[in-house]
Length: 258
Image 1 (cartoon, one colour):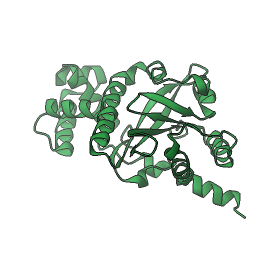
Image 2 (image 1 turned 135 degrees about the vertical axis):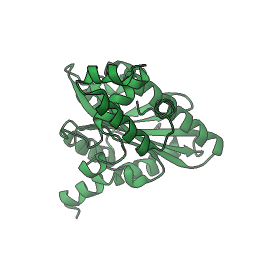
Image 3 (image 1 turned 135 degrees about the horizontal axis):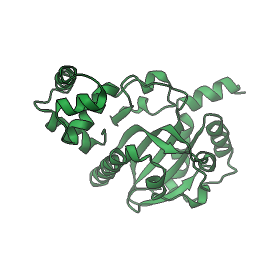
């Protein structure tokens, strides 16, 4: 008999999601039984950990199934959730990053479709409007994979987790793009403090440079000296390996990091 401790460990490693994929991907996720013991277990654990997930078809831009936790986190009934709701949920300060990230994961899905194989993980943190109107810090984990059993397409399994419990992320945000599936797991401090090389202050400066401000203007806005701004700019270039901050800004925008 599996103890609660074992079940939690299995869930925290997202093994239950892999079981969900193995069981329902061959049918195109069209016959998910909400009373399936696997689904009941997932629902219980996701509510416990303040999460919800949905499965979508990237080629049709269509959500196929949404878990019950959606209503508690966003106020939207699971059956009513659409891709367009996410434009409404995102805080205005994250909108540019969200738009760039959206472009990134659509490109990733197109690449998987053309290659007709593979899987990719794209994860990042953003502020989401909760059901009560307050904003919370949320980790978005996008697990995309090619499938040809029910139809030739790319499926998206997206897990959203309330991470307001972590008061500070080391480099301001979490961002991961790649094929290392060890990153697809329940977020803890070790996971969330990976993925970003720039500090919160450096991200602020990068964004202000992107708005056309010079070092003196940035210093005035952040209440630091132009000398300190220039020191941060040198550190930014050193960390990134870029020749110019403008080149770095363009690259970060394309990746959805700013």
